[in-house]
Image 1: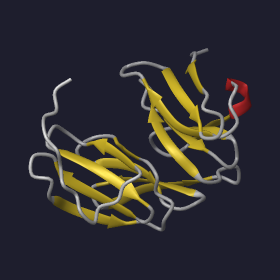
Image 2: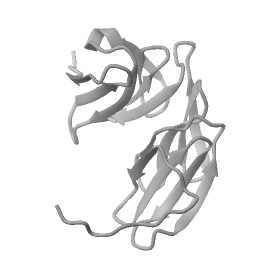
Image 3: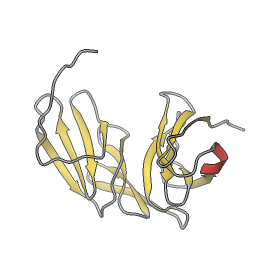
Length: 167
């Protein structure tokens, strides 16, 4: 490993981060998303959220998704909200992932489940965290171009490697 650069980011706390492209990444913390230029470390723009934004997923140059509150997840294109996903069984959304078909997955830590929705925000199903051997799903990441994913548990130190199988 070679250290390429150290960024000084005063006043930009972060829980999660995600690359947008080779030049830009997004950070999130509480009620703020911040876009940062990778080469300069300078803030490019910010978006205020309703809070509880722990993770952000960049879907393209202009599309991104984040937990906007303890019960909602927003999908944004440019500066416009494409959809807001909410469900009575969605409590404290955390990690967000995308499979090779473009379906979105939201790890819901307090409701102990994973929500699968289309990239248009339509509900597909809820996967119980206990079905994959964990209690409180926190982070979910798909292997590139695959339906294989890893989901972590925030309380046990466990991670489950899973695969969505088409019927």
